[in-house]
Image (cartoon, rainbow over all chains, first blue to last red; front, side, top):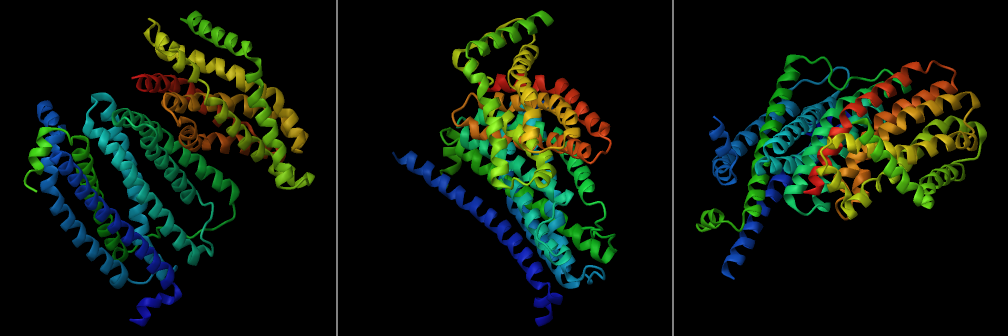
Length: 49
Length: 245
Length: 222
């Protein structure tokens, strides 16, 4: 486990590259799905008026 | 055939069929991504030349490929938008710009993180990094159009023209930057970013490449559906489709 | 056909000469920015001489960009661009006339002033003819490509900054080939290859840009 984290002393670069990429990909997906809810809410409100 | 294509591009129909695809696409993306991550990080052997930092390649190279692929999709959609004036292709142009900019930024960031242990510096004016940076600027320009031009259809057509101009210019820019960097670093032996790869290292890369491709399609569909809902919010079919909620 | 293009050029030149003060502004901007570099970097003769090819060309890009903003602005406001569009002659040729006139108004003064700037920035004297040639070949490309951006943005408020964002990345190849040519001339190397690339770029821009400008204006008008 220790070895995997350090990766020859290059762990910082490898892990931060993977972390940044994966977090960005997930955040982009989640925020897109959240926006859908927001749009639906907006439409619902305009329907009620 | 034309009738079918026309129906396919109608926003209502598109919203319906893309909705069926999204869960499957997301599932395939997740599985491929996990397999690729496991394979690339844990199974693939260490590169004898670059050591462990080469593992960044498994996300850097797919991001870089996607940054160009998305631009090609965007320019293709832009062409369709200008010739047939379909709303759907205009939406695809603007959504591709955002997604493509994200892939380009990721390719740059992971490239920098790869550069530090390999070249000893985060940034070199290396030909590929430089043309990737200019590609990012091209994406930013297209995204900025939508903040300046409020009318979505005009903005869509302006963005389409720019996407097409960009696709003509990208090879010229890339060629000139490559030539320029060979001029300024004549004696510099750089380690290639994609070493001649052994199959045991290549397969995880291919899995990741397909995973990124699937991710792009999923995100494009989700964003496209949002935009369709928003643009058509005053129509009957949207109200009907949302009545179930 | 040709006479129509000439008429457009003549009209724009006439309009420009009626407002001579505006004519001077891009040139003044050009010289003032060039003056900033020695102040900001270093007045050292050798050091500046090494940087001069790049400095002159970056300044040229900025000056060209700033001058582009106004190319269609007035025609949009007074509706004459619609009149051109409705005329029976091919729109892209008329628009080409406008770009040609714009280059005569902004590019030619640059050609006149650039040797002076080269002296201010201590560019070695043997490189000045090559610098002049790159300006002659390069600025028309900047005008043609910039006009596409101007055509897309000048119909909208806030288009000015957007123009820079859209057009500057497209200027990169011109910057690279032009400043490399001048650098090569400073080092006494052959420059014909670089100039040939600029010439090829100019031909490509001359052939393709008028259509793109015409199509862009059509969209901005709608």
